[in-house]
Image 1: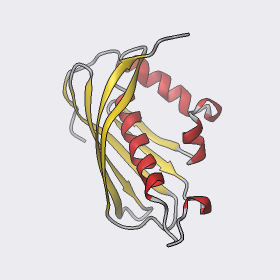
Image 2: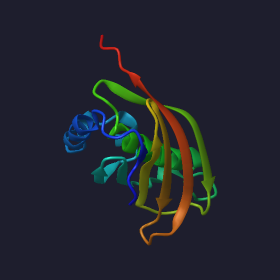
Image 3: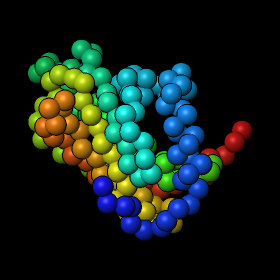
Length: 153
């Protein structure tokens, strides 16, 4: 994989280590990550590979996973990839997302690969591919997100 272009470093190392600990404690994952049974297989700076479940309740009457769920697979992979590069106390907010559905998702598990293509001071440009277990690409997405400070309550 080619390195992320744009701003180097930042506090990503701290965030990366926090994410690595988090993925091993499934109880602390976001509820949506638990819903799609997200299992992080690889987590590196600006890059993530996640396995997702395909559940019967995700299927529409045409016997394929509803597009919103496939979008969750892609968005989550991109956001996790960007989060590895965020500074301490920052959280990625997606501001734009585009997805192309290339083939129907009819069985699982599926893999979501997310990566940061370019990073500015607070803006991230990301892409993701959702593939079946044979490596066939089912969906491709691009996204723009902004790192924002999380206010502690």
